[in-house]
Image 1 (cartoon, rainbow, N blue to C red):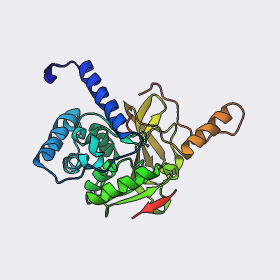
Image 2 (spheres, rainbow, N blue to C red):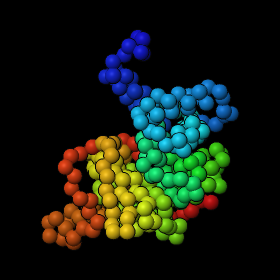
Image 3 (cartoon, helix red, strand yellow):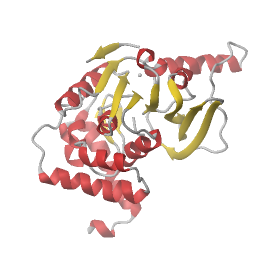
Length: 287
């Protein structure tokens, strides 16, 4: 079948088939990074990705576009899925986690609204790709991953691709952030939270932005900007991320208990008028 004549529903079925086939190959762990020297075809794939998936959807920040053209996404996925690295969808990376769709990485980077020199906290390292993009934009990045094996894998991938000196990695729960490195110009959370983690707001400098998917099954990508008078909130678009885990879920259980007469929950997310799986957080540093 001519791919250019496939209907959107057919393309979706093909992508889902590839996704689940790759998931079976990966199993519950992650293989080695793709490895190998960069080829002209990879450069062309990145250029095409930026042109057709990112710029075409309205991302305009030149720093973001340059970074997306520069970071080798294929080096941040298992070798089994490297050939799909520049396609327009998320990919499984093992341990029930995924690497986000390229557009989502780009829009979250743009919403962070950072210019070098900048300091950014990322909660949910995943494969390390989002951290690498932020580092390529000129930021010093502090990133936390709750899945120990994945955190170590991401650290290795960042070292191999030359971003190890600009990205500080830590394995642990990111709910309380990285207070000794605060304040941050931006905090980027790459897993869906049931409510806003107050410690992350407190670690923003004035004018800093928290970019975070909020919700359970239905999620909305939100930007929370810290100001002198409080916090401004903007809802951007509907998304699907894997859930944030760790202490945030303990808080959710306390919130539920509060609803039936138990302890009152703190920092609950305000209700939204309407609803909206890309990936998942204080512990061991890797420098």
